[in-house]
Image 1 (cartoon, one colour):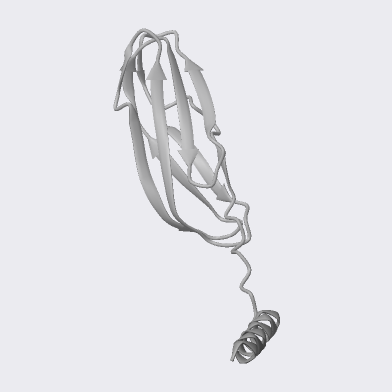
Image 2: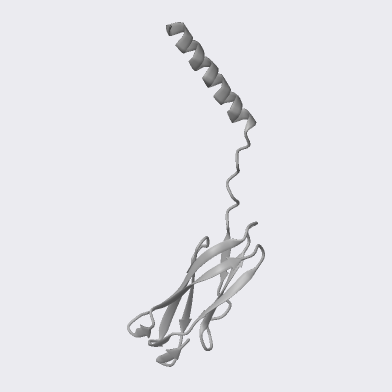
Length: 130
């Protein structure tokens, strides 16, 4: 009786191992890689270009543009949104307008699958509108 159980277990294990060799294994999806560029922080508003440099379409890309000032105030402190999709080699421009009182403002742009980018602007006037 014990030999029959060992034999059954051995046959079952052999079948499972053969199935593992024969059945296709799905590869992990390609990494969705994005880059962020802040071309200019002067003028009305700040814009950031989020580009897909990956090989697959990036979906549900969350982005945020945050503003911080030294010794002043800024409103709103951040703006965010979600991009439904960005095709490979495609790009999307996101924009935000901030109001504040300071001589220096620092902007940080973040997006899913991307390294954050920081840009700084110094104004001579104390009131700024981006």
